[in-house]
Image 1 (cartoon, helix red, strand yellow):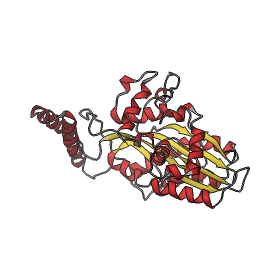
Image 2 (cartoon, rainbow, N blue to C red):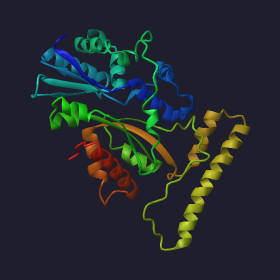
Image 3 (cartoon, rainbow, N blue to C red):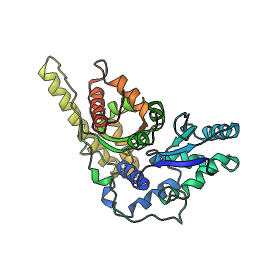
Image 4 (spheres, rainbow, N blue to C red):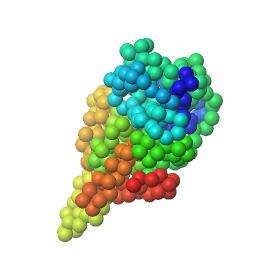
Length: 327
């Protein structure tokens, strides 16, 4: 057991996961000191994606062929486990994953014969904030959700919810090790088409977007395109008019669908189909540092979609403010 150590885990992990779920369902009015419990109900139904943020990091002082085989067994269950060989400090190998990956592997069929994962599990059993996710007998103190106190993002005003770059750097992790294992979770507002552009550059990434089933978009805002010059003011006015009409048509269609007796969840799903790409949405994403770096290189350029470039530059400023190196 002394060969494996738990080096880091995201502070108030259940509270961060609650924020992700609340954002999806827009149910912030139900938040109290113990409201994180509702995510247990979500995850018990197999909806583990809300736990795809945050980070758990382990250090191994030595490894052999059996450990490498166990790692490959875990990767078969969930491809998003990360590990690297380390030459610095007391550890020869670093392993990291988010809670979704951890739970997925735990529930996998091969875990019983996976000695390495059982050692990782023994360590997380000792931490109530982690053990809580898979043992209903474990309780954590009822406290205010500090992530909820950060407010909401705005267009060009993203929020950095959590990062472990600082903590892992303080442990002596090298630049290459930080790129693999350090994660940053950002809450940002964008339009749906730009959100898809940003999201598709992510690997080992977790995120959430407003639910089509639960969130009513009757009063959804629309994003103005940056630097749009049609050469004809009438074209610009017509564009704004058409976008505005889409919002009115959504509201009208939603009402008619509900009057026909269609369940309100399905009615919202159908009605949302007519909303334009310019509709504003909020997205929470957690990526390893290397994936953020990849996104910034591709989208902070004059050749990128203007809206995507503007969003990325605001995110880069967040990194700079927290002294998170991206170069």
